[in-house]
Length: 361
Image 1 (cartoon, rainbow, N blue to C red):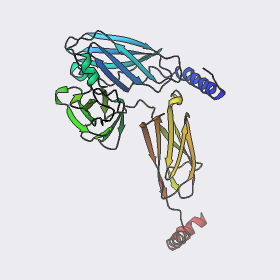
Image 2 (cartoon, helix red, strand yellow):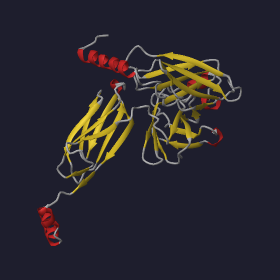
Image 3 (cartoon, rainbow, N blue to C red):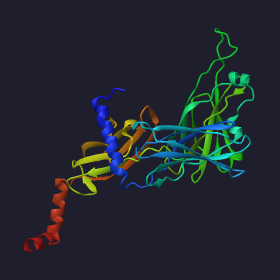
Image 4 (cartoon, rainbow, N blue to C red):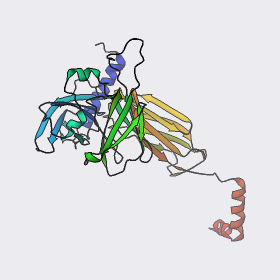
């Protein structure tokens, strides 16, 4: 691998962030972006993290019926720019349902658990014969969740096209239908089913205070794909794992209410231990947008205006723009005192002798 100057500089900054932050950060934050695929006796777990000071990861499978626990350890990648991890767990009981979670570990301790995923044999849908595997469509990949206002969630995925068996070159393959199943992770018997021909769907019936699990399968010629990726959804907490952007206002006047024309410096920043190589940042004020890559902060200089009173900062995953996390900050802008207003107040002060009292004082 050839290292150029910018890459070396980025590496030094990342290592410095790890050294500085590991002294006071304590245990790492919880892993959020997790999905699991089951293949009868084994499962593959994948997750993304955007901090650079985690040391290793612990995968845990706990059987709901027999209570047995299976754990595996995944060491931290030597590549400081890596944010994607995976591991596999073997010797699963074919008819057992498992609670799956991942922990991050550093020298200060263990993180809280990742969102729980309920994984059963029914979700795997693994066929008994190799011929059945060949004829089935492939399950979607690269699933992501975008949180919209209220209880609306947009789930997107990538359609994976495999070989089409028994179809001639001149024959048009049949269209693919996608089926998403989702529901309360504590009660898998009450899951909902939605269908679409697109590679996305909006779920608008989710509730707060509920942890959901979901998966998407492809259906073609009455055959359904096997081994889908099961992933969590929650309206109560950020599930992207991205650092929360913080917006601050710096003004020479040191006040909370601004007057039209006041100079303002608005800054958006993320923690210095973030994996900057994977994060893009965008600051929006009115119609002005500042977008930068691989930075800890974005700054915009502006003046207070009655038409603009809110700043929005958004961080997103490189090459996966729909995976994002945003913050908003609003402020109050008042109209400047005009000449007519000052003249009227002066006349009122003279009339009630306030002005004369002020002069004598």
